[in-house]
Length: 324
Image 1 (tube, rainbow, N blue to C red):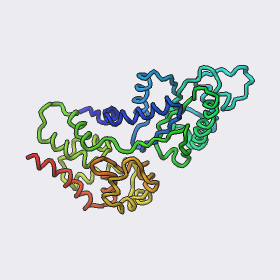
Image 2: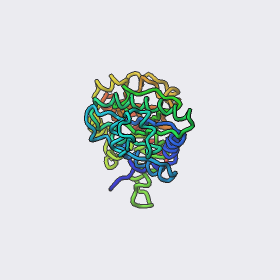
Image 3: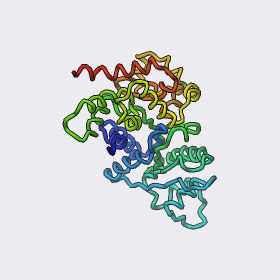
Image 4: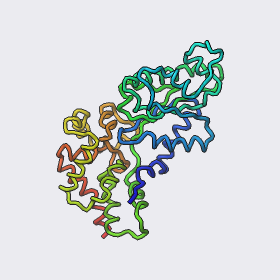
């Protein structure tokens, strides 16, 4: 089966509200940095946003940074990529002058940020802040602000992340879909309108085990018939593919997450404390409306927290048995 869960999740109603919030910021003249865990494809999210920008008739251009050379100045890269003309030619290549050039679009999207040389991350992050500050001058003069937009995997930029302000919005992709939405996505993937026992089993088990990790759901799609020990082995293999080890998970804060009460886990819906940023950035945290913030199920398998793993399976199976 050719699964589409990974792409369909971005078209859920709550996902669309998230993207609409980004577009609203851009239209109002704010540059936007959207942080996502490393297991989410930034380019796929940009494809969704691009469609919304086109629909709302927002003027934009995109620049790919994957071929940029080490140490290349952002002003030069943007100017050359957009084929902007500096008139007169001897005009100093400064940020203020760049913002004054003709044919500069309303929105510039920086694609493949994480694929440029790592030595460029800090300078480009600083440039984002400088750009937002320079736009304050345009607003004072009554001119239209020019915005930069990026989706970026959090580990690339978090050490250099600028502070948000009136001209720079920071968005975090935290917790979509909910378990109910996940069940609907599972059902939409079935080939038949009549659900057999295996399909129902998948529909109820996957949301609890995968949390909001759509890629884990795809990974386990055909393996939910396995017993708990076999399934734990599959989870460990998934975690190994993500680069998660027991030491790394503990270093990122897995023990601190364990200390949260049920109330604390449920209340962290729109704000993630800094102590959990590294876990989230690595994709090792799940958040849903039903269960709140949780350690990724595959991380539990790596940490050999078998009681918690078995409890999660029991919670997942319970609604299914109630159907019988």
